[in-house]
Image (tube, rainbow, N blue to C red; front, side, top):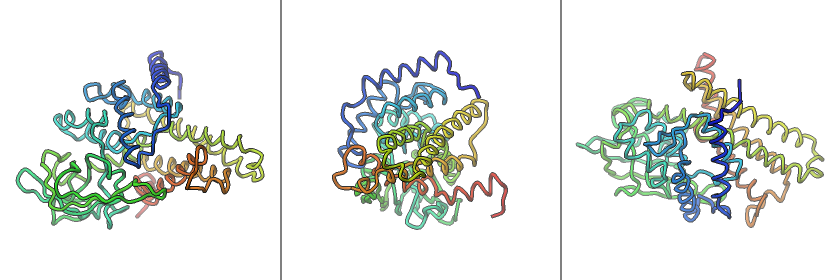
Length: 385
């Protein structure tokens, strides 16, 4: 694998680095799991869009820059390397956006994608239900056709940042006689529609990171359906591939965390070396983050030659989620008891504690790692169910 960059790629890297140096917020933004922080991040996303750096790999006419995936990896390396704010509209930009590119009509692309790239519309995901978490085929929320509308009834839960979002994309059972993977439709729902009720669910850090969303005779136009009626499972599985594959969690994110972990170890080496396994864990974290980055470049090369990401996206999801968890667990071991102070935690300790709490969810969201191992066993290894 040749990792030499072209002059065009080097120029792009230099442009991104210079723009970030001139435009990064002077002070850290508030948590996007608060109303204040959410709006601060929306404004930051708008500035990225104005610089044509929001969704660099999207076509220019849809709010992007027309970059290839190698340039996207370069952008991510510069973005996370500069310590730029976390992206708040990931559900829309990195999950729904590619889904619309593949399954949306031209009208839907023009209607939704430029506003999504600019974060004028912020998106939540509506898949999980109280009795349909890992087993998403058990969805019972209904979307019954009534002329040129669907009438939605049911409940979604664990919907990330739905308390602040403008829209929700989700799966609903449009054929009431169907079961399991059949008879589902993929719909886009404005969250200010009459009949929608949103109740926050607090995360481990006490912030409103999630929500449950209730639908009581909510009317949604048929034109808000992505793909054919009853084919929602097929559309959603493509979205899940984006979620588990490259896009949702770029390698640069974990490389940045690994570098911070090395810095944390060096700053606390005298106490950390009392446990020799910590030094080993830090070294392994750095190597694993670099290995994931190299694997991503290899995958991008395959995609450029016409390959597609299939069931192997499940291996990605397991690797990055468990790597993130191990890195934060190692940081907490280095910090010791002071790393566990939730109230009044500042600076370095707050960074690692917030990350540690969030990392607990990694093996659960985007499909639990137990389910991913089943997918690998059945679809990649050919093992019996």
